[in-house]
Image (cartoon, rainbow over all chains, first blue to last red; front, top):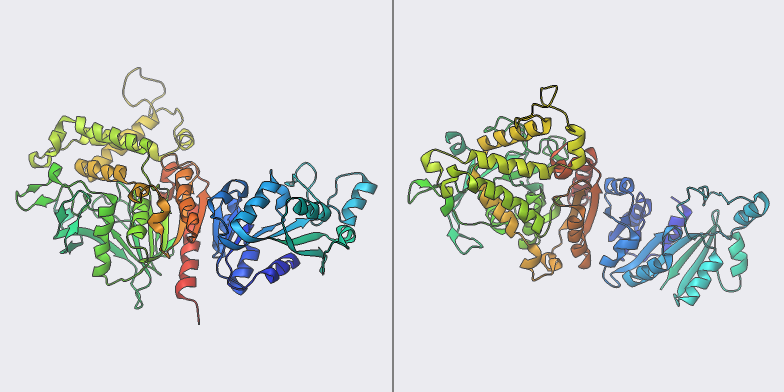
Length: 197
Length: 377
């Protein structure tokens, strides 16, 4: 399983109620279902992925996070997970607000556009960065709103979203992000994983 | 008629109070079963048929000699696997395949009930079929499944009996019949009633039947079961056994000939009064109104796991109406899954060979059964 999913799973308390927004083919949900909580469901836009989830015996609703989160009551989940999808929304700020309305906590992961490889790519090649975590070309990327870890931390500060856990992932290396090391982690992290309240 | 008389029936001795206020008892429900009920009695599935369906979803229908209406979905190793599950399928009351309906004989007059048959509802149909579970001594079904009007019965069943099914699959349906749905049904009813042989519903005693009106009703309804794209691809403007237009009103086009054929075979197997009564039951269906405008309340307290399925090209019970059920269930934190299947085959998709649909049903049923009943301790 992806290191990212292991970290997300480690943040979740046993037997809590979870919504995985943009759950993909259900890999993370299946792990959580088998090991942490059987009260988990997903929201997924791709029909192919929805079928893959049903095949795994997961509860999944075909839908669009930007339109369909409204039907869930306030604080109806202990955790709402959003893995590497925030940057693909038309209005990421509104989705984030919805995640925190629906869930008591949100776990959000973002691919870091501030990673040194991304910066070097743009600086030396002069073309839009294509990396392991950002595999698409500029013309076919689903990502509309790329940001860096620093951008995201600043954004949450402005909106008064409390970051209760900020984790950096670089390769297999896991470390914590705090105010003092933010600029450094912004350079070295491939992925940021945040628990927000 | 003898053939119908010889079908398998359960006589309900209990009194059933209908929504219209009348009470019925000692009435027949014609049914079939497929597969075997296990010793734990936890593998039972009750399926509900649509407007013109019957108790014969698979195998050869002994009355029409045609394949059952759900042959693609139900049978050994199919999506609803009869090697694994015990499937009960009943003809709805109001129907004409042996269950209590307008063509049943009234013992007081020795004539068919005809227009004196009480107006029935989806709720009445579901309550009547529930008696079958007592007969089979099934306390809790594994699943209730149905498409179209069958899906409405699924919703009503879970609402009436909140913990009598582990899972529920309402397919291509609605919680509330729309103005368009009612309008289309009214078109069919008016076609039947405009046929002079309808005779205010008393045609059976005179050995006649409003087959022209019923055929037109079926033709109109059949169009609503298909999509524009599906029709265009299958028929287009192709001509029927001719090279040029004949400048007349014979069936020049293949689609005309197809609809006329569909109408003509339908009248041989379906009773016109049943068509009136069952379409009325669908029109009266409004689960939201039953719960004072809050559909969520219909499912409050139910632990049933829902899986709702719609089809992209279904304009009779479109995705939005199916999604309304999902929204109502999510509002109370119910366990609900949902998928919209891509298909050009219109509302009829649930009856046809649509692999994405059949796989989804199969996977959902098998995984749910495993999780609920086969988990090792």
